[in-house]
Length: 328
Image (cartoon, rainbow, N blue to C red; front, side, top):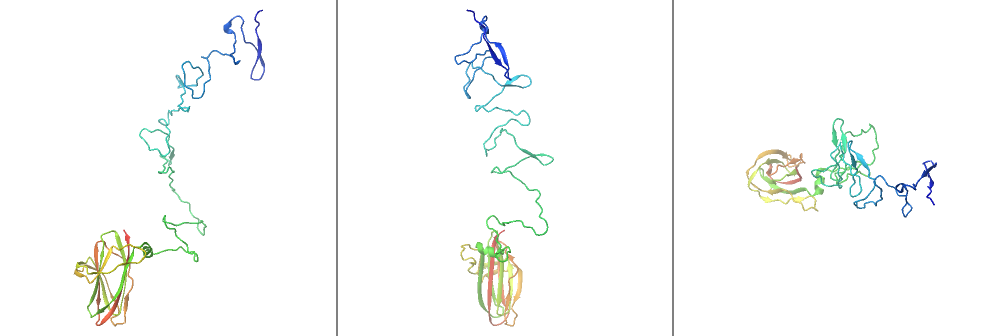
C-alpha cells in the first residue's frame, strides 16, 4: 500500500489552522522526523542544543549566540566566569572596575567617579576616612528677630557639657582660676611675720621654670603699719635662700608647681623694677594691698619681692601669693 501524505493543522498566532504537508513520500530528505521523546527534529541554522548554566564548552556544541556589531563587523557578547555581561566604557571613562569598600587606591585602578559642579568647574565629591560624604555649609539659615524657640541646645567642648541653674535658668559659668583649682594647677604660699625697725626688709624670690606653663599670679598683702612694696624682674642671686612650701589649692591633686618660692635670698642684682607701691598709713592704724591685675610671669626668670618696713617699732605683715599655670 502506498504512503499517503499526512495532513495536520498548524495554527497561527490567532488560532487559525494552516493546512501543511509535513512529510514527503518521495524524497526522504524532505520527510519530518521526531525523536524518542516525540520532539520534532529541525535542521538548519547550524543546529540547536540546550545547555546548563555554567556548563563547560565542548567541541561540537551547537546553539545560538547573541552577537552585536561594532559598526563594521559582528562581535560576540562576552561574559565573565560569573555570567556577568562584560561592558567596556568607550567614552566618558577609561574602563571600569569594581573595588572593595575602603580598598587602598592603586596606580592603574579604573572606575567611575561622581562629579559635582560649582557652577563653573566640575569638582570631585569628597569622603572622609570613614567613607562619609564631606559637606561644607556655605550659608547658615538666619534666625528671625525677636523671641525664638530653638529647642534644646548642648554647649560642650567635647568632654564637659555646660549646665543651666535650676533656679535662675542662667548659664553656669566658672572663672579660669576656679577651673585651674579643679584641674590641680592652682598654687599658693600664705603666712605672716613680725618686722622690727624702720628700713628692715622682708624678701622673697620666685623662680619661674623654663617651660611654656606660665604662671598667672596675684597677691594680697596686709600690714599693721606702713610698708613699701617692690617687685623686680630678672633678679640674680648667689643664693636663692630658704625654700618656702608651695601648696596646691586642690588637696586631691598631686600636681606640683613649676615656680620655686624662697625667702631671705642673697641678691647680687635686683633686676628691673616692674611694680611698686605703699601699704598702710604710716600711723600704725593698719593697711592692705588688695589683689592686683593678673600678672603673667616670664619663663626662666627670677622675681624679687621686697617689702620694706617704713616705721619704727615691731609690726606684723601678712602675705598671700597665689597663681595658676597655663601652657601657652
